[in-house]
Each structure stands twice: as structure tokens, then as C-alpha cells.
Image (cartoon, rainbow, N blue to C red; front, top):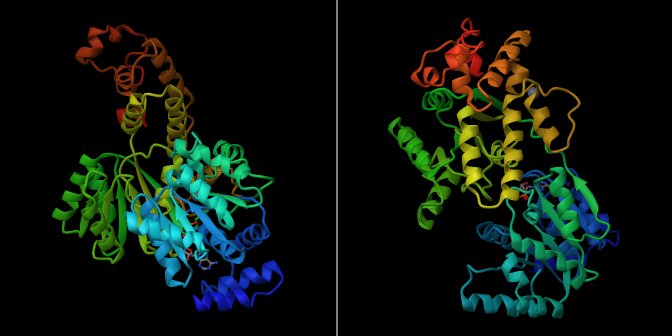
Length: 477
Ligand code: ADP
Ligand code: ZN
């Protein structure tokens, strides 16, 4: 567009100054955020880069600006087709020549995009990994001038990432096949193993490695022992009548139930899950964005690419399967920087449930990784110290001081010397042969006479009834 052309023609020689000019003239922002300036300058000068930034941190500009500054078209690889369209629309609104090329396109449209690619008319082209790797397309790219490759959601290349996509592995070819074209990897998953996999598999060449802080200080993390969760949710929502929020639950059935109950209670709430047709899902998403809906009850399917600034809270009705998902989902709260809340209802039953689901998976190696991640999630839930410390620590970031804005900071758990109780519990676990779950062990400790217990002869054990003085809730806890 003329506006862009004008901005790009009058660019200063100095790269850093040029990036600021584009930031201002094209995107209308006055200053870079966090490490954006360093990234943008490095890539504009032709270097590879690995960017770790939390959701909402501003990754898009990191490739959009160098793509505009460098001659040729910037190729953005993203697995999220619905997100592509939003990004392209936003770019078009800023006068940038952007398009997408994916399976959602009709044949005529696809041809037109390719024609524009060959004519050198595009600044940015968003492509799904499948399309990019198809032979025809890779050949085409050899014939046009390329500004850069940006691989979004780069954690998909790693089995350690929470969203492994086998087709991503092949993106490692880009580095050799397109020498001289900078390759960027971007992700909101910063955990160490994933990071290592990204670097290795994408073959980045001496990349600048940048990690922005993952802290979201305006989000208050808290946790409740899950007991009558419907009631707990009701109480939580009571004080938040007009605030927008998302409630995550593990199964479609549960999502429907919760949404139904909230509607009966008079809330403008709707269910969202992958079992609903595309039209319904789109409508829920739109009504939520417009504030016609106050609450969305959803499975993990909801929220990819949602950029709603005023989500005031995110409730996890069930335990998420890993910290990555938990962090990404809670990160959808408070994008406007105003106070927001993340509430997790945590019950031990959920761990067993999640473990069962994971063990149903066919790939033992994958199951092992997922169990390890589930254990980390459970450890986070059980922590008696600052939640934010635990959370950021998981992503390799050290917080100097306790945050003062999480449940354990604000209301520290009571402590007592539990050595004797721990001895009793461990001894009992051993006496029952280390084969029983919490419920049974507590029954034995409490000296219960359930049919099962008597049948097993566990009333004869030396640990039967040694913990009568403590109630079962306390033992379970
Ligand atoms: P991510 O892809 O990391 O989740 P986005 O790139 O979508 O994040 O950016 C999140 C929001 O922050 C967007 O609304 C974007 O316009 C805004 N943003 C990014 N960088 C800046 C900046 N330097 N100044 C102001 N707003 C910015
Ligand atoms: Zn804290």
C-alpha cells in the first residue's frame, strides 16, 4: 500500500532506527516491548533467532517487522489455521500485504495467492506446515525472494512440548535448503528440554536466544481443595457477576453439565468443545469477544488465538494435564494488565483420572513423558510455598522474592511437625503391601471395618487404627 511504501522508502540507514520507524509508522506503537527491539534488529540484519515469550508477550511483531524491512516475502509457519486469518486481517488493516495459504482456501483463492507470491506482491505469507513442506510449494519458494522464515508454535517440533506435531520435524530442512534466509523459532513454551529440541531439530545457525520474562504479575494464582466443585464455582462466581471468565473442564460431558448449571443460575454462559459444529463454536467465540457472553465453559479446544483483553478470571474445574497447558490457559486472563485471577480446583482423584487417560495412550515413550509432566503439575498443586515461584521455576526462571499475589503468599498454609503422622502413614502403606490407594490406606489408619478391609484381613495389621485421632480429610490431605 502507498502508506507502507512511503514508510519503507524513507527508512533510516541504521537498522535499529529503521525498526522503530516501522513500529511507529506501520503498527502505530511508540515503543518496543521487552526484548522485541533486540530480536527485530538481529533478524533484520539476517540472523537466526529463538524467541521464548509468554502468550500475549508480542511475538508477532518480532517477525512482522523484519519481514517488512528485508526484501522479499516473510514466510510464517503456523499450525493454527483459525489464527492465521485473524493475523492476516489485522495486517491488512495496517496496510501490510499479507495472505495465507492453507487447506481452508478454495482452489481459485489458492491460485491467486500463488500468483501474488510469484509477482513479489506479498510482504507476509502464512502457511500451514503441511502446505509448506509439499514439494510443489518448496520449489516455488526457491524461485522467489524470501525475507525470512518464522516458525510459530515451535515447541510442536518437540515430543517434550505439549503439542507434538510430526510434520514439524521436517522444518529442519529449511536451514539447509534456504541458505542466507534467516530462520526464527517462536514459542510460549520455555521448558528446558523443549528448548533444546527446538534448537537441535530446526538446525538454527548460531541463533540469538531470547527469553522474555514469563511472569504475569497481575494474575493471582490460587487453588482450592476440590470439594463439591459445583458449589465452589458458584461461590467464586458470586462476587464476579459481570466479569468475563473462562472455566476449563476435562471432558465434553462435564463442560455441558457445568454450562447448563450456570445457565440455570442465570449466567450468560455457553459450552465450547470440539464436539460442537464449527458454526456454533464460531458464534460462542464471537459472542464472548463482544461481551454478549460472560462465561465460556470449555475443554482445551477453546482459547487458541483468543485475544480478548478483559478476561478477568480463568477457573480450572479439573486438573490440567501439564504445567504448560495450565500456564497457557491461565495466561488468557488479564491481558489488559489489570488484576485477574486464576483458580484451580485440585482433588487427588483428578490425578488418578488423568493418569488413567494417559496410560490409555498407545505410545509408551510418550506416556512416560506425559506422566512426568502430570507429576510436575501435581507437585505444583501441592506446593506449600509461593505458587508463582514454583510456576516460573518450572520454566527455568528464578523469582528473587515471593510474589505476594498468590494463595500461599496471601494465606500461608498452616504448618506443624508431621514427623509422627508421616511415619504412621508410610508404615501403613508398607503393611498393606504398597498396592492400595489413598482411600484404603486412610481406612486402615482410621481403624475402619469396611467389608473390603475385613476381607483382606487388614484389621489384623499393626497399623490398623493407629491414626484414629485424625479425621480422614486430614489424612487424605
Ligand atoms: P503473542 O503472539 O506473543 O501471544 P501478540 O503478538 O499477539 O502476542 O501480541 C499481543 C498483543 O500485544 C497484541 O495485541 C499486540 O498488538 C500487542 N503488542 C505487541 N507488541 C507491542 C508493542 N511494542 N507496543 C504495544 N502493543 C504491543
Ligand atoms: Zn506467591
